[in-house]
Image (cartoon, rainbow over all chains, first blue to last red; front, top):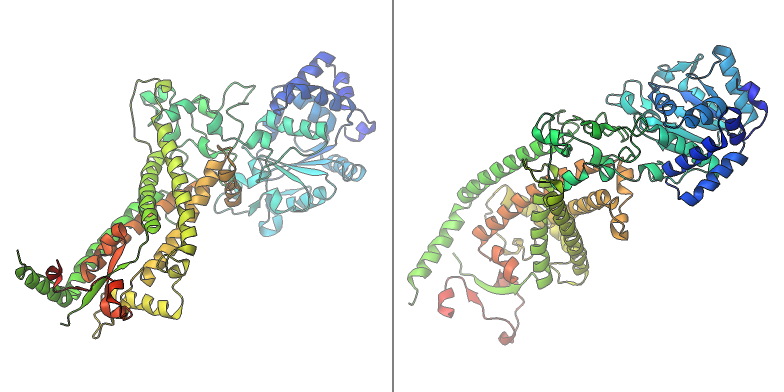
Length: 374
Length: 250
């Protein structure tokens, strides 16, 4: 497949060739511009870029992961996203979706890496185990770390899909037996876009790819390397249940009347207030719903170490080193009790130890009292 | 027992006292609203969300008080450069030789309650004793932790440049989870500090009788006459107060 795609064609040409109409194409341009948070006046630029830009080759690597990122992507709302942009046009190598397998597949990847050196985008799904010489994840007889370093060498940019590649996700949770490591801790000399989420929203993934095609550069990133267009707000800030939060109306348990009324899930452990993502606005499965809308708190899947910041159904997070169920408040109350007890003991001891001093002062004070004039 | 004469000495200047009480007040408000925000009380209500905003109000009070706390702290830092020697920043770092001696003395006499055979009057501090001063230095660091984590969490919802100066804190520490945990845990350290601080103020007032408690209201402490330089013009300083004969002066 990939080898046959040597004839250069633009995105637009490919889209039309696949049987979509000009109208479909324009609808796609409008749709993706809206998701990218662009003004309507920019739609023309998106369309123009797709008409004039030759496809960017993409190598999509799978390491320690569950393929939920790919699943999310191919279920993206608009067919052009999955059908055209990646699957049929740009994706030169992906274990899951490509027709070729074995030596053929590896040959396709090598061909792309040589032919498009410095031009292709490397998408990484999954973390890289560094423990035991990387033997926990091997593809075609080579360790994930080996493959990543090789593929990153000629990449124009790297996209770290999902929490695995961005943060390590569940396999990096304590005690992290395989030493699962996110991409940015291994590759230091390439621009890396981190797209956390377990999985990230399909439209977010498409939006990032289209942004790179349209503008020829990385989208604006925040301090953690995440695209600002999608990760600058907390889920909480765009949550439709936010008015209940401000009104102080909370579900106490999942089966109480408040939960049925659709009150805020803050007290049953919703991580919305600590999680940066677009779930509240873009939502999932063609905009049908997202966890909070379905009555379950956000578990913070796009935040670092969210597996270790449990339990999911409690507001406070456990403190490391104090047992998993201890919360800061329990420790605080115990500490305050110990301190108060210690101070009481100290007060008694002070009065005993310093009794002579105190007695002489009291005596003098009483003598003075007797000498009072009036 | 020898008779001691005491003089009133102005120790805590007005800005220091004002700082102290604004600080105490804002820490109290911040801790109370902070705990409400962390674990809001259960309210079963039929009210529409649009009719009610109490949780938003609690959060507003928390954020507004945070600004008061912060600017109050800034002013105190300024005052530590222009105020008297008891309020100077130098008083809070106990590792000069003299202050280190006092540090050990306080640990021995006030923490472990040892009695000295020959108490030296100069061991009684006029301003902060070295241990107390050091605890305030730690409290200051703790306050900085609260400022950085607090404004860090707040910055995403603010468009003002001041909180946004701290927007790097959350990515630096790795996310809201850990920042919030630090912010919450530090509050408990403030509470522990307050317990010990209030106890020790009472302790010193009770054992030394120099106006430890009232000094933070009026600014004066009673200091032994023999610790003052002898000045000929007696008019310039207040009349000595004899501990035993206080009443005769009235």
